[in-house]
Length: 90
Image (cartoon, rainbow, N blue to C red):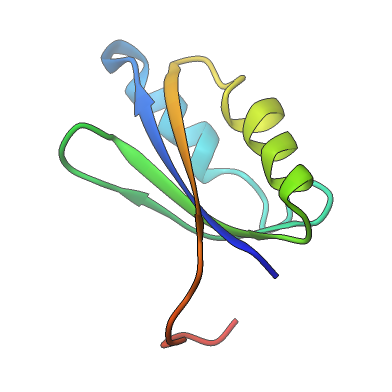
């Protein structure tokens, strides 16, 4: 199952509301998508999400229809990933 990391930029005045919306997603927010983490990050990005998707199309639909539409989200950068070693079990 492909894994994805999404880096997210948020408009500063809308940070609290946007972060709440992103953190409140259920574990399965979209068909074929399972969330693993929502994390604060420092630097040019504000937040990131790591998730699995059954297909690339489901991953892109989730990002475009659920993440990008949150008020305050100004930019997203999606990275398909290939794990080398699994440290955590899901």
